[in-house]
Length: 447
View: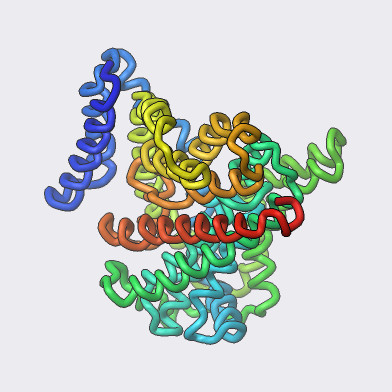
């Protein structure tokens, strides 16, 4: 197999080929991702019997995590939309934040929701709000996609008890309570700058590819009667609450039968399935459209998203197998730069090259964590710098890239401009905030 800097050349070449096939040749992303994944494995020099198995394993492992979730999420969103619940929730956000600040409201909502809920699940659940808010406010769909996506990914990377930050706190020896507190402090400006301010900026400069007017309901399909705002929020929040119970049960009732029951009910796929069943029963009086039509439309949409998301995972698995992450870490350890910046760069490059924010955080903290005492830096600040690096530069080897692209109805170019760059700006903002905190390390508790 290839080693050293040739791995970086192959990685960059694979991305270039992928963009060329999708943007210029107009090849279906699913075919482009699978083809480039296979070709990359061959060029790297992986044994022939491992190339196909790595691609299929990567595809399968990705869908094991999000396949059922995407299918249930699309059905859930379809029924919420047909009942008028999404419109009610969008109206409540507008009343609270006002039309001009509604993207900030959605971004902060995403930041709060993604603390107990995984990014993919939260984006699927909340994506129905995007077009509704855009239709009501006249603000670009791109702005709302950026606001929601960045808000979700910031807390996914910065605030425990999501797995990445939790492992970072453990590996760096940071006190968890303070780590959560300062993670919140860092997450808020990152969300507002990368999600809201940049979202407003980019939304005015690129044309959205989806049809916002699709949210206008045909009179024949209008809800039978008006749904209440409270019921709408309850249904949207139900899967989030169930998943939160799973998280809290392990903290409050460890090792008990109750914890096992809540853990099962709160597993993300089970939680969303329960929420779909509840929605089917509770929303029936409000929906005029035949259920068969809603199922057909949802499954048709979910199928395309599932294929592309799985293919993105397959491409990421080949890149991961190549060892490029290990090579980059070994190369950068000799660089003479400030330790907080080095931690950010470590994590950022692994995030871009491996496609997984969690893997980037775990790997970087595993290397730098044991060196905290020698580095002479606060464990909390080092951990937060690592977490900041995992936020941005989501590329097509990240399954989340395709979730945002497909649910947000963005082209690949638009996804790079809005989601990838927006996340990078949020990550840099988080790093700047960490450096600002470091100026007061001797005065702030825990630092």
